[in-house]
Image 1 (spheres, rainbow, N blue to C red):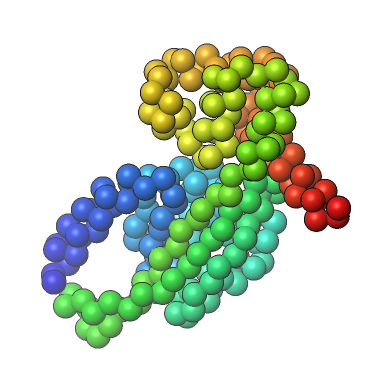
Image 2: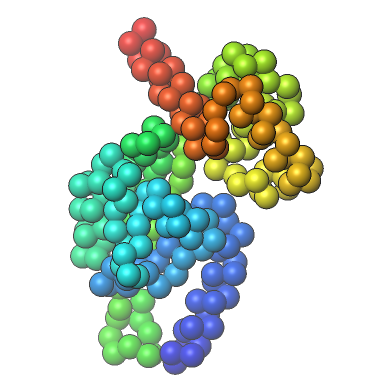
Length: 207
């Protein structure tokens, strides 16, 4: 396989991976990004779990477990797999990060080369927390469905596709959510859902 064929295969793979609603990334042995799907690009853009520093993958300062994540990225470059639960300092949202090293034999490179695969799976807040918000703020069934979509890490476009409505309808429902809850952004709205989920989890463990 020559370099051009490798680039073509990576391009085809990226188009397929863009259909996956989970952040998927690949890095070379030096920790530099070589493949990022659309969901991962969104994650890197806001530096939620991971950051892109001049093409090099790093732990985001927003992650509570930043030291452990930095260690996991370093281990990946050494050929070691990891699995971590991460927490966003700002919102309390959690996600699971999985890293897996792969050794490939490429004709374009002398000898085997190692790349690292990573994927980040956000943990949606418990359905009970969305239901509680719906009850507290008297949300309509349509508003609750939109909140559930946003809590599942779907953007407005994906939420519209899932609910079979237009983006304008979703935007109208989101504005209504802001008006009823008194919040001003999707981040603070999701932070409320995730904090309620964490509170419920702690109450269940202490009972």
